[in-house]
Length: 381
Image 1 (cartoon, helix red, strand yellow):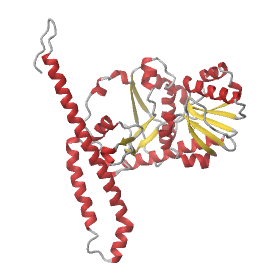
Image 2: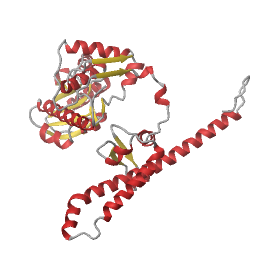
Image 3: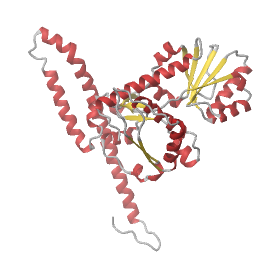
Image 4: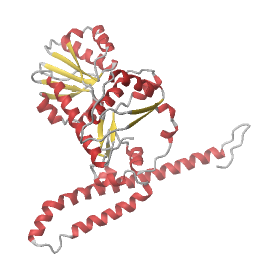
């Protein structure tokens, strides 16, 4: 298993963020001069973990950023860069954009940064659509996204359908590439075990890509000694179980996406949706995320009392003490107060949601018990 403590996990998170961000900026800088950037929508949130929009613009030489849509972006720049996963629908969309621009007489240079790399099917589509000569293809091996100090994700929501239903193993390379990226930082992982067809394919490809070489670990990063790979299809039952931890119920109620959760008016008291990061950077969430939901309310109550005690310390302070309190403690208390209110509101919604779900289940079972099935009798549950 990975020997990752709290401090070493945070160090790996920061290094992975820095290295991936620099790689993205360097890839954008391969296109000299000012350019507009069109990003596939599902990549916007993951990329925000490694490089902010402001950094992409300033360091990457990007004038404007657009979201990839069916219609061509209203860009007037002489250079347009597309950043997207190398899929058939994406490349067809880019080809349509270029053909539309050609019809309108627009003079522009086009670049497509393929994640993780350009593949032959991409070139075939561009040739078929008659735009291959107008595009330069680049690659960007986006690996694991550091959502938290102990949580890393490839953010490939379509992988299950592609591999297990369509039989498309093209994304296996992305898994191998992400493991190799980790090994470059933490050293070669000596023991790798897997179960399932995909895991077996990853192990074989890793052996080929390594080519017999090994990586030395970074002295300040954790050493990973074991890696376990499991295919989803060897354990379908787990995803059907009811989650009982706070983080699990938060996901089932609000849906955590790319490490962020959207709260509506019933939680934040605001008319518009508010998107909040759900990771250990929030000290309250860090303490309750793996706690059984039945114990969360008592913890939040105790935390509220501690915060009140922190506010009460200001009474009877000298002017110098008040200055220190405002400069060093007040902002932290206000942040924790906001976080606490947010989690209390979320817990109330989760509780109402869980109660309504249980009531619906009882009603469903009640109807099933009262139903008559020919030739069979339902026993009491």
